[in-house]
Image (cartoon, rainbow, N blue to C red; front, side, top):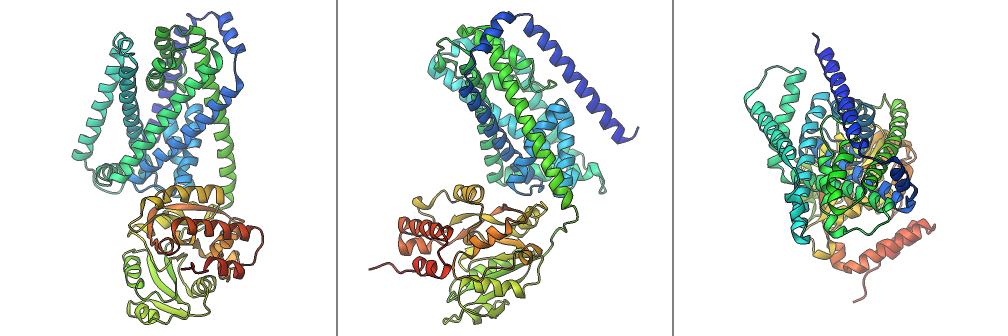
Amino acid sequence: MPPQHCNNSWTIWSRLAAVAVTAALLFIVYRQIDFVTLQSSFSRIKWGWFALGFLGYGIALALGGMRSHFALRLTHAASHFLASCRIFLVGHFLFLVLFGAAGGDLAKTAVYSRWYRFGIPEVLAAAPFDRLLGFCGAVVLALVALLLSLVTGSFKEIQNMPLEMTGVWALAMVAAIALVVIGLCVFRPKGQGFITRTLSSLRIGLRRLFSVREIGLNGLLFAFLAQVAASAVFAVNLCSVTNQPLPWLQLAWAFPAITILSCMPFTVAGIGSRELVAIALLRMYNVPTADSVAASLMTLVIICAWAFVAAAVFWREELRLGRLAETPTPNTISAIIPARDEAENIPETVERLRAIPEIKEIILADGSSRDGTRHVAEGLGCRVVTGATGRGAQLRLGAENAKGDVLLFVHADCWLPPHAGRAVLDCLRDPTVVAGGFWKRFHNSPLTLRGSRLRCVVRLLLGRRIAGDQALFVRRNALEAAGGVPGIPLMEEFELCRRLRRTGRLALADATIVTSPRRFQQLGILRTYWRMWWVTTLYRLGRPPRELANIYNKPVPK
């Protein structure tokens, strides 16, 4: 039997099993319900709470998308975090219409591979790690719920719960993980076929899970937060239907338990299992059965509402990516360094750029340096071009002389890691992305400068731009279509991002640039942030860049 036919048969039977189990659970639940009382519970819905629950579930999906992003990074199949969040949302729709993870994971893998041009084996190998991180996040949340029950005096209720099946599922999960790890160590097929590539990606992901602690720990953090947000949704929905005071502090442990225990394998969106678990746990606190079921059904409504949102995103992306199907994937990068009197900083910056294999040339755009910057750069093998002083003019001159598919603008005091080139090219696998930058942190950052990574997200999502010290990179054809780098003395990256957004999206590549805090040290942290904000505001109001440059570069009075 052909492999494709086997996969189709397996997913069809898994869907039928999900429908059958869900139907059986619903039959058990609704035998216990007085429908008149249930209707009364729905008549008391507080729509403000319902809206809050809808927002909470959206946050849970976004956190789940970040968890999925770190799973994709384990197998080197991540484009950028917004792409991962987008496909996770689409996956929510696919899981619902295809009745569970069995069909949903395969469909999501196929869509992601087609959209972002990664191999199917590498993307499919990330799915088990996504599930593993989700399971570990649920375990951490369960431990927190247990601790909360001890603090609030609710442990007696937990001791009286019939948890045998929960133990069986936990043991089965641990055994399955152990078998997978043993299989990856023992079974090593040869060749370059689909199975070989998938197993190879699984082994790579397993090694990176333990060797690159940043990925594993961040994935676990987002998995935990996603579980917390999903648990809060049920609590909010219960608030919206109940009309009696409840011991919320003692109840707090039950909501994570409902979320975790309702995630049974082979159910459709948790239907049936969520109601059954909610009735069993909340009954211990005299919560009416009708209220438990009403809260469960409202959670289902929110899940379905977000599935409609996901379907709209799916449709929009299909149309947008269909128009960009012929967009070539870039392969080479030209690094451009605008510099003036940077002889001291250039050697370290260039050395780190040379450690990035995807960078094929380094161009230093000199702005009338007087300290030997040009000679230092030439000695390091850089191509030096000279022109008018002013960062915008220097960047424009460097871009005009560059030959790479991607142009990377790096400040002279910024350091990039060796994997930054791969991160750039992976980010640009998304045809809708025309430019981007990196996550950022400062050298020897003082406490008051912490939180740079969060500011990068806020700047991208709300300000819709990339800062110059984040090492802006851009497709060559997109830069040409935008008219090149604006030759202005200040706010050149702001204006360039504004022009680039007319043709595509901006994104953050999966690497962190380390930049110097020297300007903050010279002017003071609060004064620097104030000056940046004030200059940006004036630019939005139409003040000319040359006047803004005088304000920005004004020396501090001694």
